[in-house]
Length: 265
Image 1 (tube, one colour):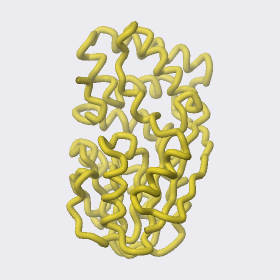
Image 2 (cartoon, one colour):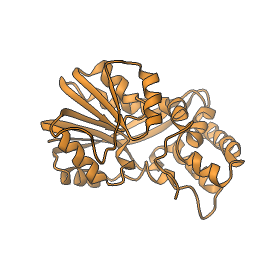
Image 3 (spheres, rainbow, N blue to C red):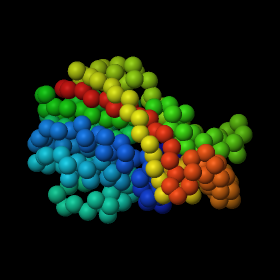
């Protein structure tokens, strides 16, 4: 079975270097801009390589900040990238958080919920560890077609595998219905739920960097290597050509869309 959540080995560093500036930085800044209050204890779930963590630590008033992820290799990269000794980094499963009830007054998740094996259970865990009146904020990608350069890369990857393409890209873009987001968040217990469609422009240093991220910065890389490792460079070069033609090079620019969901316990 294809590993769609296996951010391990070389993938976390490539994810951070080649996708971080283009895909994740614009939305990290957006999430943090929505947090103007002072929080006692912040929990970040699925912190990845620390794009949001860095801004939480610097820009949001707080007493403690705990950043967790299921993938130890991602946390290792995050520690290097952020390098802030005040942050408590922890390996943790979002399905079974190792925290007492009502431990935090803010829970933050950037593009993590799509990877949860049980989305509602993950949100219920976030609800459990929040104090009464505490805030949840998370984001999730809109339809892949609205994230145009990534969509082009996905189509090219799939074109090499006929009727049995790698399935990774089904996952991050699987929660794009804002009505579903409201429903699942409400079922977990939250109230005063809002959704906001946020449109950004992804800007990366080069088309080749973005092509590397699309191929080598996520678990699709493992799927390609299992099937036909000799295709890695061929696919990357193909994606670079198309992205350069459609979105430019040095820098590359492409539209992005994501939903932000906010709720209160």
